[in-house]
Image (tube, rainbow, N blue to C red; front, side, top):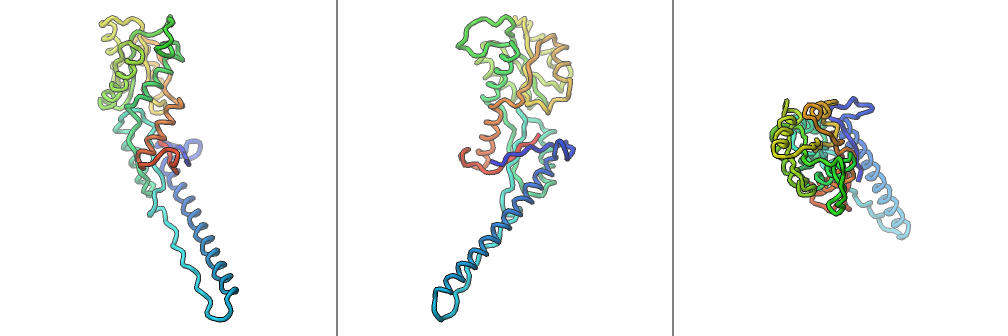
Length: 267
C-alpha cells in the first residue's frame, strides 16, 4: 500500500496539502503508466521483428497493438481516509473540498468511528496515564484509577452521540461509567464532570476520543482543568488506528487488506 499523509490546512512543505498530495500521486501514476505502455510497445515490436526473421519470404506480421495507458481520469488514483475518530461536519467539508479541488477523482471514505478499536485505544491511553488498569484480567489496584470517564470529542452533537457509542464499549472494558462531552461546546466537560460526581464518581479523567491534530492546542488541558479532572493523551499513532485506517480503506474498495493497493490519509 502506498500510504501518504495530506493536510487540509497544510503549508505545502513540512505539512503537504491534501490536494497537492493527490495531484502528485496522479502525476506519478500517469508517468508510470506511460512508461509501461512504451515498454509494452517496444516488446511487441521486438517480438514481431524476431518472428519475421524466422520466417522465409512472405509479409512480415504486424506488431500487436497495445492499449493506450489509463489516465488519472480513468482509474482510481487514491482513497482518502479522514483521520477523524468521529463525525465532524466542518472538517469533512474541508476534506471533501480538497479532494474535489485536486481534480483526481479520488474516493473519500467515512470517518473512523465509532469502533471497538477506538475504545481499545482510549483504554490503553488511560492505562498509560495511570488512570486505568491495563485490562480486566489484571485485578490489582491502580491507586490513581479513575472511577468515571469523560470521553472528549469535537464536531458538535453528532460527534458526541458517536463518541457515546464508543463510550459504551469503553465502559464495558473498564466497568466504570463513561459519558461523552464536546470540547468545542463551552462548559460541556465541566457539566458532564458534575453529572458523574452527582452519580457517585470522585476520581474523574478526561479521555480524548480523538486522533490529536484536530484538537486546537490547549483546548483539552483547559477543559480538564476547568472540570478538575486528570487527562489522558489523544490516540495519536496508536497501532489500532492504523489497522482501522487500513480496514476502512479496504472496505471502501471491497477487497481484502492484504491485497490493498494505494491509499492515503487526510488530517
